Length: 422
Ligand code: ADP
Image (cartoon, helix red, strand yellow):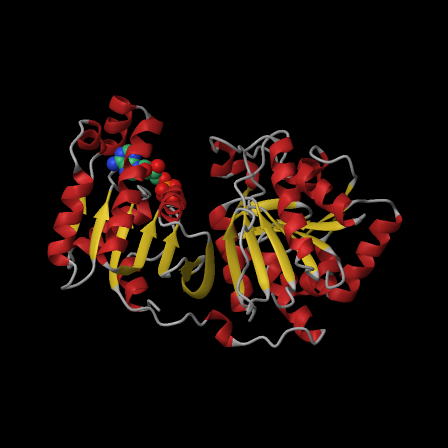
């Protein structure tokens, strides 16, 4: 393998894609791997994002997964390491941001790192250490009711301090606004005072670029995908990277096209409805699946008859009342699992039919489909909509995948994605 510049560890799958997409936009050729890589990776890449599922597992498990990923990245001799978490600082009462950051810092022999989840493009900003989601404090946003990681305190200095044994300082906006030199000076001051982390204010992309420049010589950077905006420029300045628009180029893929959707979010439901105005679709119903009806075979037979004329959609997506009904009858998890399993089997059947351009809607659904297709790495391509790039799913015969989570994408996302497929 060639020289890897940036080695990243992401605490969830779609967050990993978001980071990878940012790096590609900055001109770095980026590969996302699902879990710690087992085999060799392609030569022609500048950054690797190892996507874990460590956000809501126990801190011990998150640390152990993250250290295993770090070891792999260190064996690849990366110049810099990045720990990516959510822009809303999603964490449980025990972690896992603090414990994982501590463990990575210790392993790398690092005594100080930034912690900056800001992502102004998606309206996540930090001011005086307080995280805002649009106009609301994090603790007053919808995140306060998140089922797994409720965020009830917007003060990130306090939140992180509760998760780490090190002390947490703040680089406030006046210093950030002055630029990279002033930020670096603030870091030095905090380091001299014995601080282990700095929450860094950022309210726009200019702030993030300045912070990015100020961490050029930090072995470990932690944050959201926003703070990675400035990192490709550092490698260019150091003469290690020739950033190029070609970083997002994927090889042309020949094959049929389809969409599978298991997301029931508002955005996805309107994308499904939009598609149905002009394209064929087939609906999967968890109640029929639970009754033993072979809807997978039916959907595939239906697709086979149509797909040579143009792309088809197979979906479980439904309106909230329908979803609730299925959940009441089958249980939330069982209903979800039935649809995920069916859509995974459909994706495999479509692949066998010759589909090589596949749009998948739903975060969990994407994870399940990628696994079923035995894809263990994604080469990241051009962005379709913010946070959603085309990717090339690597396997013996590669498949182009657009993996869209929940509320992402415009109403014509499915059509737009396929019109821009590699
Ligand atoms: P999102 O990114 O919108 O959250 P996910 O794929 O992560 O989408 O989650 C949606 C979940 O809902 C999946 O587990 C999926 O299998 C499940 N699901 C899809 N359709 C239905 C349905 N009609 N009834 C119940 N659950 C469903």
